[in-house]
Image 1: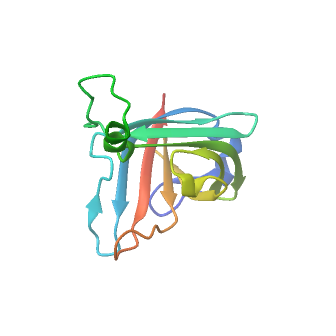
Image 2: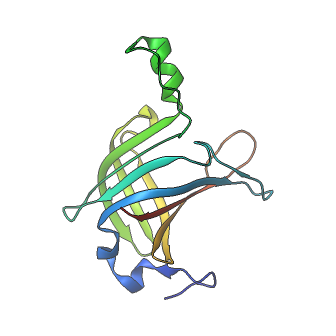
Image 3: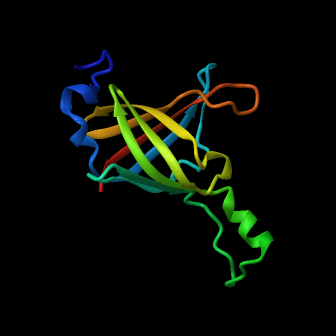
Length: 150
């Protein structure tokens, strides 16, 4: 099935199309008012892995993440970089045009034990994942992450 935007839904190509290693191309938050922001910067980097055994892992960070001058692992030094990095892993399940990540380990403690649902499609050979609306400040933006095969 192809959508009006030209993307191919997973039901048409099979769940096996997710399996493999993906490199982050872009991560945007799109607000209802049409504004777009880049929470990890325009040059964010990361990887997403879907394994045949039903496990997944995702990690991404800001490209401008500060590199400390030393090997200082103090709470202050860790805190500066914590906001510029996110990672989680666990089992995944495909439900129609959605993939559900059952988070078992996460850099965000509030995600551990949660289900993170993403609408997915394929556009020009790239995997597009859209989050369900996130509550950030007064808007309800949707995260759009574009991945290419690594």
